[in-house]
Image (cartoon, rainbow, N blue to C red):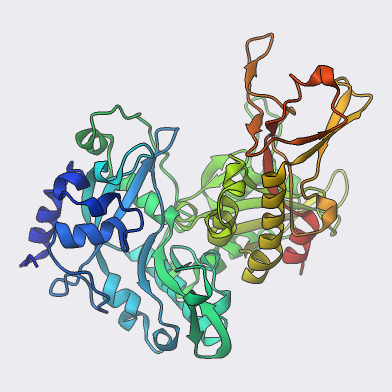
Length: 508
């Protein structure tokens, strides 16, 4: 094993690997073995730093208190960089960890300082072709650490309450409890309940890692590591919700955010618009004004349908405004996950699906308004929410598997004549709101389309359909419409949270 006298020497050695591909670091058939246990991190440990992989409680470079992590970065179509995945740290021992204080916890002892080596991932490359693009010594900022300590306490409190089996990444902000394995072999004992819990590891959320990537990796770093062109993209500088970190020394982050809304509880939307002077350039009230009100209360930015804040970006907190109907069930359901590709249902396992990832790792901030009548809308409250594990692994998983089966057998599409301008409507057999199963699937496009992308008479690209994994089973489709209503295409769809389910989750 290579020895390092200090952290500077360690970092300098790691930086020598920048621009090198894994294949250039060491030639090995192991690289392209996708079943390689430990993956590329293990490869770097053994081939570059020269030490055997271990499960020691102390950090990898114990004399320096530094843990090594190797993690991928990918480029989005927008040109922005993103972490490809969460950063998995050490396994949580349910039977021991609750006995520790934060500064003596296995998380802190092993991960208080990280040597992170980022590599660039592209789908068309072999693993031996991935280049190292950046190495850094990461210590948590004072503000981040205060939030991470709060997260750690939330995880420990669940263990102490005998609810380790109910842990979810959505419980916390920056530090998550990620599942490690998905079979019965991955179940572990917990100290305060006879129910076994899924094995989990501490992890830094993908959203936290993305914020870190965007703060330290430059376009030049990418260019140095690859000869392929990279897109230039200015990343929006986000405002923080917490303006003074002293707040976090005596108040939980979530509680502080909720209290910001409590100050305006009972205010009408008209009063809030006037108070914050929310108007368009033409002097009129903007559409989607609820999100603009939320931004003003939090003191951050965003757009007409999103709220952007430093802490929310790192914590994968998604703001959704909910408008009750005079104290009862909201009229609208909430879109939670676009179905970008039907193969993301048909050809993957539940734990690898975008829907599972979305609901398991996302924390929602529901800001609740109440429409008393056509003229009066009142701010009621704000509430942080993540889907309970019992719902995620129960009803939602069951529904997802049912829809997977339908897609793999061929979704049923039924043609029906109507008095509309088009003259017909297409119905499918995917789950509906009326089925009352927490989630449903419905279109996510302004116009329906059942054919491959094309350009209309105005040369506008019509791209409102996605290809099906198996040809659809059509009922009553007129032969003359077969070019318009094709076998292998269906209008874009999305998963939605049922409005009645949302109401039950947010009501007093």
